[in-house]
Image 1 (tube, rainbow, N blue to C red):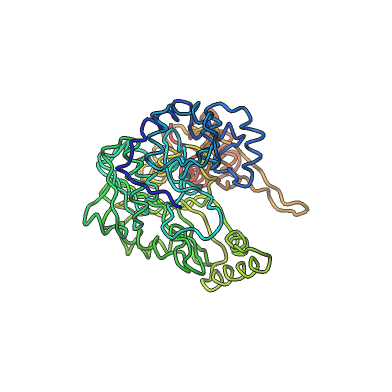
Image 2 (spheres, one colour; image 1 turned 120 degrees about the horizontal axis):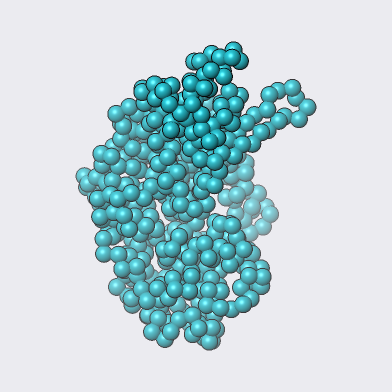
Amino acid sequence: MTFTFDPESADCSGALARLGAIGFTEAAVAERLGLEDLNDLQWKAAPIYRQARLAERDPLASAIDLFVLQGALEARELGRLFDPEAQGALVRAGLLARAGAQVRARASVYPVGSRLVVSDHAWVDGGAVPRDQVMYVGTDSRWLARATVRRPVAASLDLCCGSGIHALLAASHAGTATAVDINARAVACTAFNARALRLANLEALQGDLYAPVGDRRFGLITANPPFVPAPAQEVDYRDGGPSGEDVQRRIVEGLPRHLAPGGLAQIVTELGEREGEPLEDRLRLWLGGAPMDVHILRLRVHPAQVYAIGHAVGDDNAAFLASVGRWHANLQAQGYDRVVSVLLAFQWSDDPWTRVDEAVAPSRDAGAEVEALFSAERLARDPSLRDRLQRGRVVLAGPVALLEARALGMRVPPTTQARLAAQAMPVEHILAPLERDLLERLDPGASVADLLAAAASAGIPAQAVMDALVALVHKGLARPA
């Protein structure tokens, strides 16, 4: 039986406060389970986690077992976790169900940073996923939560809200936070969470994307839409039609009508990629010519055959292989050579640009790093940048890590990759030889006049030096002092 998300049920705020008090945070849960990132959690390893990491049954271990690993607790252990009042509230709300001497959670509690979000379990025991299943807080949800730029806005909008995770987070820096989902259970789940977290500035609306908000505009729009290119529509929160674009295309098409001036839209999704067709061309087409900056952060690339195997299901080997064939045939029918996990950002612009970066998936809050990439792009496009550089100094934007790759047995120059060190979402940059040479001279900083003089003595044209410095600024590795 699925959990009924009734926002008018018993007040669970005290129970969630108790979880916060025992340190039930994303970082603490990951550390306790021996994970670098909670996204690395594996359901099939639940017995190993219990034996190796949760053997000492303190309240944190009990909470992890109950609300993360979907385990059962004896009444005595539950009593050490929650007092009778909190237990009663959880039972009346239907979140806890008694089965003889044991108690199980009928939904999971997901720590996201220091926030707690209730949603359906990540793992369903047997059978098909119910059509109205609410999306659990998974990898994509955490990526978007970590990459969202957290700046004050009058109003935020989260589309395909599911549990409401992104609206719940936005409520801390938005005057009003609006969450929309076509699934009535998702809307109820969001309202349940808002009440449990005592968020008075959050509204949850049922409807098809922008329809419930009319002509309203928002300073922040977030979305984690159904995006999987599936041969059949089986899981509504996941599948985006055969192309994967049925929902996400409509979200992008609606941005010009609903993104406020100065606002920012951020979407986590997957896009099928065809050889010779840049993803940015598709996004520009969906925007319909609207003058917006488009930033694409490529996080992971999944070859078509690997993607098909990862999504196939079957009770036996023959059924599984048949499922692989259906998934791969659909990807071939769409012309997809691969599927790319991306974080997209859109903002209004007087001089629209498109930027594509290769990044490592965010491991913690990276909104400031996203903003720094925007700033680097704008600075590199500033007509006065070269004058500023020539009259001043250039410094590193932060500690830089360099990686040199050589092709074994081949007489080709090594490829140098650079990234800012200690970043939550490191962006990888390929450096030209001159860019690398200059980068190594910028610690702690250098006069551009001195760099030009040294280059002239080595026969390097001043124009080449200035071009390389601008390229380093554009990549966010260097900046004018």
